Image (cartoon, rainbow, N blue to C red; front, side, top):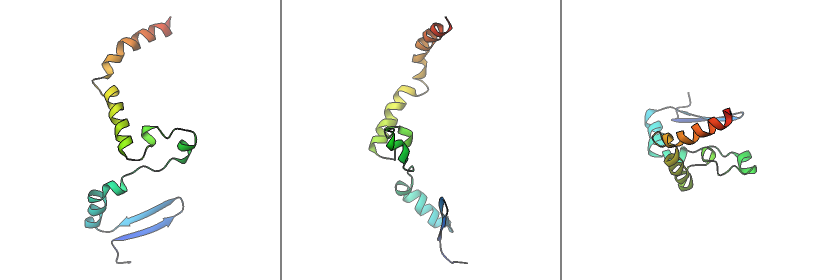
Length: 95
């Protein structure tokens, strides 16, 4: 109909791009993923001081540092070291 590889629709509350060829999709999503793979800006999070929240951060060196630090303390193997403290605190709550 439009004879284009990309068609943009400005829908209310949801701008949409329709990609009409695998070649263009591969180019955009694989070769240029660093441009398009980002998180939306959470204005409210910024306003209330939650901009440091790793889940709300845009992709950047700071976010990578946050993820690395988070992973060091919460990966599957690290969780076991918290069990003695959790057990102790459970006993405190139950008593």
